[in-house]
Image (cartoon, rainbow, N blue to C red):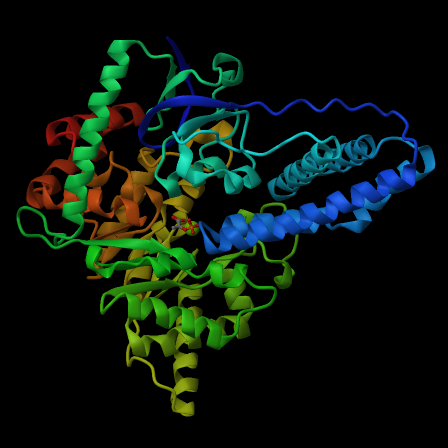
Length: 576
Ligand code: PEP
Ligand code: MG
């Protein structure tokens, strides 16, 4: 029995046999080839076929589990088809008669070194993409298999150095019981996939590749970030108990999902879902939530080669409005920029994209594009209870300008005789310290707030949400973040507007009761978490919590706070 420590990637526990994904090392020798032209022709055939496969994978993931994965596959296909890049190794093979694999590796190293030397994390990421595409081409040239085929019918826990986005799409999800990877952070592609599939994942484990062999039993705990190789009978029994309990809890949460979100003492809360791709729109079950608390509109723009038309957007918003069956839907206007880039928008290269030209800043600058989106949302408001929400607001001026454009869009529609709801509430995301500090003023002009903790944590704690090294600071239990949340709720309520939360912290089990006690009106979470959050609401005493949270202001450290929150959970019982 051996314990491996790592980072908690995706929650849950699993016990299956391990499948170690050992990629055969490809040995590269410069060598000489008998017929350089034949070598080049073989490469071109392999490259063409690979690019086509990537197109198919992009299609598969667009239909299946995510636009983000589809966008990555499309980017890989662009790299694979980049004649400018590949003409250099081809020329080298033609001139020197060396192996194509060697020439590709050489070209790859050169360009990756250049990209990796740049400060911009976006450009650094591009180096990873080029490396992944070139490695796959080299494998194919050498006839080395890179399939992720899982033999047999039983699920396995995949053990890998890291998983590329391509791996996560190719792998047979039905046989996947969990992941454990040597590298990668808690926002890696493997983790995103694991969360979507509802399976546990542990990442960043150091030497896991040498600690486990295929076929060994592996007990994975994704909630706490560890795994045990070949657990003894006692540990295995512990897992079976935990698993049985989890199944019982799942049953409780399923039932809770179909019940009203009301606390024991009769306080009404909203438990809504976040939605942001075709799947979640198609799968929206309005009977199991109180509405859509965050409808991310980026997918409509990411799935295109040009700006989506008003009609296309209108149809998408109308579809979600109708699926919500009279419940409210908060449509967030375009939040592009930062880590989300679109070729056709020709966005500038920036040193600090997260502090740059993104979200509402870009929309207020590209008014025509923004008006098109606002007109589409207003038109769809004739078919359901829509609200409009602006991302990344940092000044009152931005809110006023954005609201003026909503008014302009409504006037245009009126002049054209096009139907829309007489009043569509307009609110904002609170995801910057600036918005927190101005929330007293913003609350006078916004009709609701929704706290976006994913960004709020990174801007408050000056901690990149994607940087593995500083993940210990990227926590909602950071007291500065909790104070920010408390301030926003208080300022919102003083002006009589509801305050929700649509960042990941809304489903953090450590925080649920605290957020309720602070007065949060709406929790917006991924559909898989709705039942659990509703269960927490249904079993809480709102009045008591409100008195209890006052102590929050007495703590100085994250550690003290975490211990306090853990004691709440202990008191409340494991279901919460
Ligand atoms: C957030 O920042 O919390 C949020 C919900 O927005 P996104 O994750 O889309 O940036
Ligand atoms: Mg955000």
